[in-house]
Amino acid sequence: MKPADPRFRILYAAFAFFEVITFGGLIYGWGSLVYILKDEGLYMELCATDVDNTNSTVVVNQVNSSVENVALTTDTSNSTRSIYATGSTETRSPAPINEEETKSCDVRDARLNLVFTIGSAMFCVGCFVMGQINYKFGTRVTRITASILFIIGALMIAFTSIEVPWLIFPGLSLIGGAGITFLMTNMQISVLFPSMGSVVVGIFCGGFDASTGTQLLVKLVYDDGVSRQTSYIVLAVVHLLTLVSTFFFLPKDFIKKPRGGLAVTAQEETEKEVELRLANIKSSDLEVEDVKPSLMSQMLTPTYFLHVYWLSVLQLRFYFLLGSLNTMLENMLDSKDEVSRYTNETSYILMCGLFTSPLAGTFYALQNRFFAKSLSPLRRNLMPTVLPLGLTTVLGILMSSVILIERASVIYAVFICLLFFRSFLYTMGAGLLNAIFPSEYFGIMYGIMFIVSGAVSMLQYGLFAWAEAAGFFQVNIFLLILMFTTFCHPLYQWRASRKAEKALSF
Image (tube, rainbow, N blue to C red; front, side, top):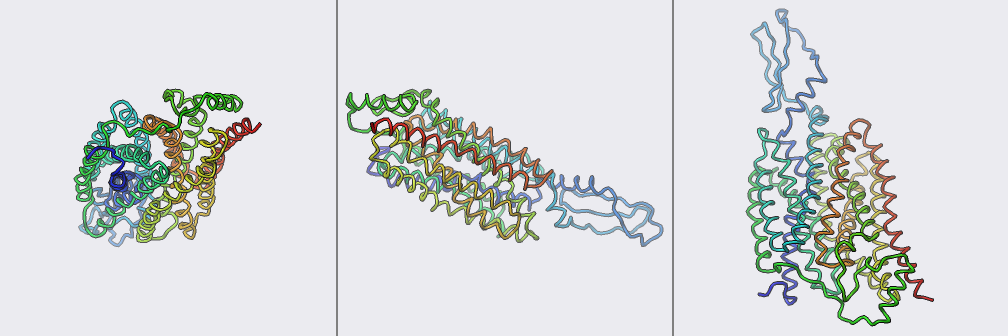
């Protein structure tokens, strides 16, 4: 079978979808994983220390007058307390830390939030590094590297324990950075679907969204008695299936994007230069159909700069909500069972990204058809992005507004807004780059965009600290205001498209 043969494009797309939905976005299933880690008692010794520091006096009824001293000791191995009456032969049996104390353990929550903060940042760093490898060495080397890193990361999570809790840090980082590589390298398959490329991108992004279901499955079998270690060892073994596509389906280098097929006449070239000049946009801002522009010329365009800013701010909002979800549920709900149920239902809802992301891709495709007859090539390329980009910001603002109502009754509304917001965010994040810039540059431009957004996402740890000190309301207000600034991206594309079209209408 010839790699990247268009006759087998359905098979390639189906296998790529399997890879992405199974391994791509496991980091986004953090809500399910952190529930397991808390249930297993990871970092519970921090809670015991926190409780001892904040409750230095323990009142015990003195039944025996010979009791002179009361000592409080904490058994960190099983998270239980034992109260011993010294000077007496009577010893009280260990009593477990009650649920309220474990729920309100800010020190443990801060440590686990740090795990997710570093993991999500390294997820972006990994995307950048893999983009560089992809650009220099091609698809095959990139995927082999990602497979090795993913398996190592999965095994680290498998062997994370109370004795070696630090393994969760590199483990989550590795499965995140390696996982997105499979979305990045499979995105080029959309080139084999000329009229449905944006829909294919949406389907892959939907699979990436729905990969939270893998973490949910780990949680569900954990509730049924299967250990986290067993689940992640199985996941590492199953990951070897990605080598099938690496060696038999995808090319060693890239699936190249067609240049367009129609020769560009001298008159058309002159008209394009005139409209770009009148629109105050360099001719290097968009790809000329018969000459591939340089990578640097593409990265220095206002469109790329604004796209990076847009994704960075919106992703910060998304990451903060995802990282604080477990704490938010614990604050809103009354019992551990309710937290578990809502955690599961969150994953079920987010798995519906399997349907909403293709919807976002279809919406983008319809915009392309609507503006296909524009006089200006610039307008034909940029104008279809305006409404999807603006709608993504609106969805984020709506989600940020609803979450200000800190009550259990709004949880489902927040989840549904999050579902559509994330689908449009990552579909447009990849879709705009895939549609406007050369496919050879997609990996590195996508990676650079994520390294910047990853640096911005590190701010979430400061936001977590702010929320612990002053409550989530103030932080959510700040993020709501910040999100309004992302309207600059679609507004700029609209203005540039309008000027270019107006220049050719006279």
